Length: 227
Image (cartoon, rainbow, N blue to C red):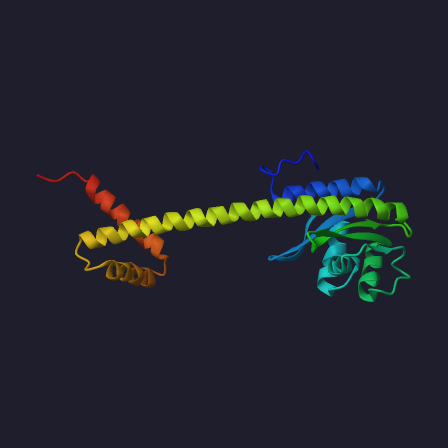
């Protein structure tokens, strides 16, 4: 994890790295996956097998299962045998049909906030033991820090982009207002109202209308006068 350069990696690539490392912590695991919960919802962002993806999809559709419980409670959850576990009857039954017999889910908690869960699936009952629990607990703590930092970085980048776009849009609108004032608009309010009305008529953002006006002006200036 220490080799991950946050300034160059995306949230998804960080999650994929964490998922691969989680699978490596318990050799013989038949599937590993990471569930992330944020403003976009609850979803699997990376999985090492189709089995893990299907097991996760069942949890989301049924709104029950070890992974969701780990995320909601902030506690590690282990299933020794899906055929005898009664905590999530619907999920256990359907997971057993997939071939899953054991599971281990650890919450991703950082700063007192649970951002998801990381989980391992096994085709054999009793696949995971106390040693796996200890390893996954330690792993999940570090994974949560990494993913949280990556999410924060991605959020900062998006905010920076939006602010840059907003400032650029403001400048374009301000220039267009200046053009309308030069063409006879009585004041800035009237000039802006004219841009807004054009935007409403054409069902476009005011910024695009302003850009078109400036582009037209530039084109007129570039045309040589006819003699």
